[in-house]
Length: 125
Image (tube, rainbow, N blue to C red):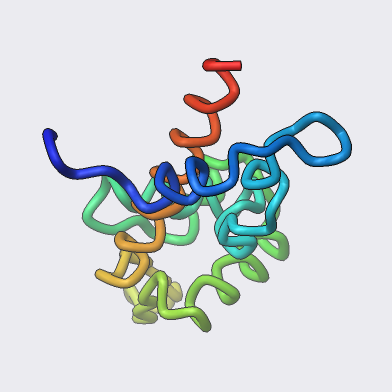
C-alpha cells in the first residue's frame, strides 16, 4: 500500500521523544478506543467481523462468558452503534442476533491499525 500510511502510525512518528519512563510519548497517550480495548468487547467485534451475524448464545459459547457479562458488553457496543441487535422469537424461545455495523467495522479497523502501529514501534526499539 504505497503512499497510504495509517493514522496511528503517523501519530507515533509525530512524537518520537521518549517520555519520563523512556517510552515514546505516543505509545503512552490515551488514543486507543477504550470501548473496544476491553477484552470481551474486542472479542464480540472480532467474532462479528468474520461472521455475518451471530446469536447471543453463539457469542456466549464462542467467548466462554456468562449471560450477564455478554449482555452488558453487547449493550455498550450497541449504544455506540458498533453492533446492531435484532430480537425475535423462534416459536416461544427468544432469539437475539447481533451484526457488526459499518461504524463498528470502521472503529475496529482503526483500533487494529493503532495496535499494529504500536507493535511495530515497539519492535523497532
